[in-house]
Length: 294
Length: 294
Image 1 (cartoon, rainbow over the protein chains, first blue to last red):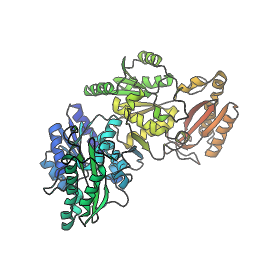
Image 2 (spheres, rainbow over the protein chains, first blue to last red; image 1 turned 90 degrees about the vertical axis):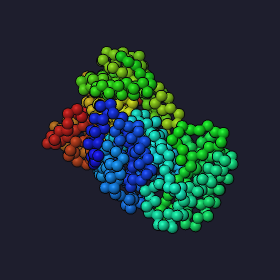
Image 3 (cartoon, chains in turn purple, green; image 1 turned 120 degrees about the vertical axis):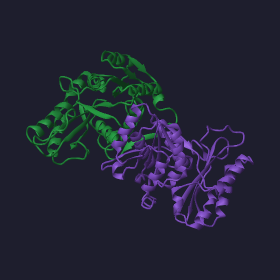
Image 4 (cartoon, rainbow over the protein chains, first blue to last red; image 1 turned 30 degrees about the vertical axis):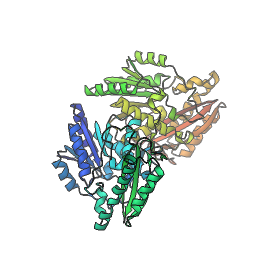
């Protein structure tokens, strides 16, 4: 596997691959790879001739009080995993390589970036959009893979690609979960044993919401949100940051569950903030294309 | 010549050209083509195998009180000129094609976009950067051509391309002028005969500044700005919007002329706002790469 540390080298490689008619499939990550990432890599392998994984902990998407400094880093382990998965290029630039002195250009979006995670983490999505745009220009993928676990991120990246006419296809893959339901996340490593046990409350709360919508045909967003909050409140170690019931495309609050609906939540367990979500729809509503289901 | 009205068709053409190893040279314009634009087309012809000109009057870069509605439009004439110059593809999309409903993504920049033209025209450069980014994604050029007449635009486009790792080379070509010195501009068409005669005051004022810096070795920015204002003030039809003496890269005000210095100005003649600029440097200072001189 080819480890690439420089933008120019990566770009040259991408140029060559495209020049010889190869399809580039790209999985951008912040490292600390887990089976969620690897499921994306496997999909990339299926769709692309050349698979590129990036490992870059993007300082611009962390707030000053957030966990940038302690975010888990282990490039050797990430590289081993990529080798095992048959990744062709691992692109792992330093922050200075991605943001040399004088950098001052940003991509931003009206509306979708200031609610939910954007409200809890001001500037977060500006950082995400900017780095994804840069990475797409450097890696030049035909396909770029994102996980449904970060539902809002997947949505805004898709929106950016469409709005700015990027010639790449965004593929959103289902959230990978532990057997007990906890969504895989690099931040799970921060959980102590008791917190780890308590963390199943996120998926249990979302499971309750899914059951209400899809089995019991409950249509009241208020009733569903209340039920989710009730499940979360029963876990004394969990502190709710937000729970919402929103339109899956516009992220606007729903009153009644009609079409496809996103139920995102953010919960603190000790000092660790975890997010998860469920995409739900009433029994009668048409199903969206495959691959978008949490 | 191929007239292209759809984003998807243009993108497909660009993909094909790149796939066969052709170099794409791109001149983005707002139409009302004049010799300034055509000088860019001729440079494009030299550097590229495929020459694409876009004609798109970008609504997002006009303020609500600006001249979007009356900006000159004549696609038939623009097409004739492009045919004469051997342009391969003329890309002329409608506003809805570039900004379909729901569009909400923007490119913006800290600092450089809020001074000079950006201060006089809030939001202007956000609109410029966004449409240029979109056009670069649609046309996929190896070379993109901009005129030094819009010095700040050329600077921020270059900065965006660098900051966001766009794999395109920005070429900035010298301002083309009438024999009497007036810089070619589509907005010159708005000038009545007396205003047209008065409009030479812009280049005369800049000529005075250049003489002071390059011949008389004047180093005081204040003295140079005062001299420029004096020339402009002597023309009763001219109303100054701004005159500045700034660092050519950072656009920060200079006190002393040391390295390469930009002297941009904006002047109203009746209801028409014209801009022009001079790039100057003290006799001893090293010259910049060719092609950047006004």
